[in-house]
Structures are given as C-alpha cells and as structure tokens.
Amino acid sequence: MPQQDVRKASLQEDQLMTDQIAQQVSETETKIAKKGTNWLTGLLAKGAATLVNSPVSVNNQFNTVIQYNFGDGQKKTLSECKSELLMEISGVDRGLKATEEAQEKIEKLVRAMEAGNPTKTPLKNPLLNGRWALLYTTAKGVLGEGNPIRPSGPIYQSIDIFGLRILNEQAYEPFPFVRWTTSAAGDLFPKSNSRAEVKFEQYRVGGVKVVAPPTDPARQMIEWELEVSGKGTPAWLDNTYVDENLRVARDHKGNVFVMKRDDP
Image 1 (cartoon, rainbow, N blue to C red):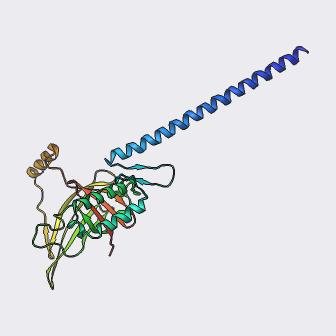
Image 2 (image 1 turned 45 degrees about the vertical axis):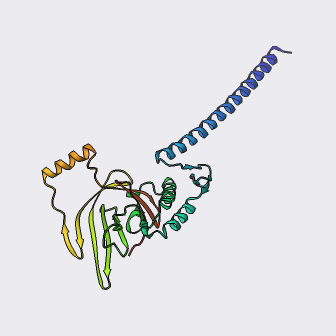
C-alpha cells in the first residue's frame, strides 16, 4: 500500500476515535447536568416549604399540586384547597364559633394556599385593589368578642395600591332601626412586595369625623425607641395570597384574615 494511503487511513482512524471520545464525554456531561438540575429543583422546593414554616411541597414537573400533611398524605390542587377552605369557614360566624380543631384545619389550608400564591407581588398588582369583605379571622377583637355590641353587618377593607391608602369599615345595628357605621382610614407604607406598614389617622363613628392627633417630636422619638427595641412593633399587614376573588392576609400580631372581593 502506498505511503500516502497508509497516512490517510491512519488519519481516518484517529478522527473516528476522536469522535467516539467526544460523544462519550457529551453523554456523560448530559447525565451529570440532568442529575444536577433534578437535585437543584428538589432543593429549591424543599427550601421554599421550609421558609413558610409549613409542611408543604410543590411538584414542579406538572401542574402545581399542593401537598400538605393532614395525617393521610393527601394531595390537593390549589383550587381544591380553596374550595375546602371556603367550606370550612362557612359555618364559624367569621371565626367567633371556630373550634380549636377547625382553626387548625383552616390554618393548614391557608398555609397550603399561601405556598401556591399566584400573585407574587400583591402590592404592585391591581388584583389587590378594591373592597374586600371579611369571611374569617383569628382576630376576635375585630369581631367584637367580649363586647356588648358586635358588628352585625359586613366588615370591609378597601385597598388602593396606587394611592397607598387603606379603609376599614364596620356596621352596627344593636336595635331595629338603630344603625351606624365606624371606619378607619390610613396610609400604607410598603416594606416588601406583599407587606406594608399601616398607619391610621382618620376615623368616623356614626358619621362623626375624628382625626388622630399629630405626632410631636417627643412622641415620635418614643415610637422610634420602641420600634428599635422590638417592644413597639408598628402595625403591618402582609398579603400572603391574592387571586381574582379571594385574599388572605396576616398582621403583626399573627392573626390571619380571609376575605372575598365585594366591590360596590
């Protein structure tokens, strides 16, 4: 065989061997990358569940499935969690008649929904705008527990994310034909995409306007000192779940509020 043909055959063998090695390296890198991606996805899902301090995990491969532990390892979609939550709170008189068992189940459902919140930046989303009617809360004071007169009608909260304003309204009717409404209006000071500090400065009781007294320098200094020490944490509201017709919020005292859209 001529020397030129021998050299050509040798080069062809070298190229074939190089191609085989490159293919093996590519397949190995693909396997490593796939394992790394699966590991990272699982780690992020576990981390998200840990951050909300809830036994919740999210299946990232298909449609979102909320998994929470009710003792039997049930898996429910976000829609199913929402339907079950509305059913649970329908007979507890906005929370006044909720037993300890009912409160625990409602809390688990709320946490599952919070983990699957479709609105990641509520304070920047028009979905938060409008009037919301209270369906359930653990803040018994809002419901008038222990008071001789309790709110008899709807309890509303209106949010304006553009003007950063908030309005709370309650109706009272202790006797037939005797009715009045109280309200509190204030400003929202965003601290994150979902949480805002709340400062009320204007109140109405039965149509009579009451304005909160101005904060003088001495009082402001005391409030700052209390805030720094942790003894006077400012009031805030964190919107942890918002969709087209349902909203969940938590406050600085640890209370939860479930509201439905009720625009006039």
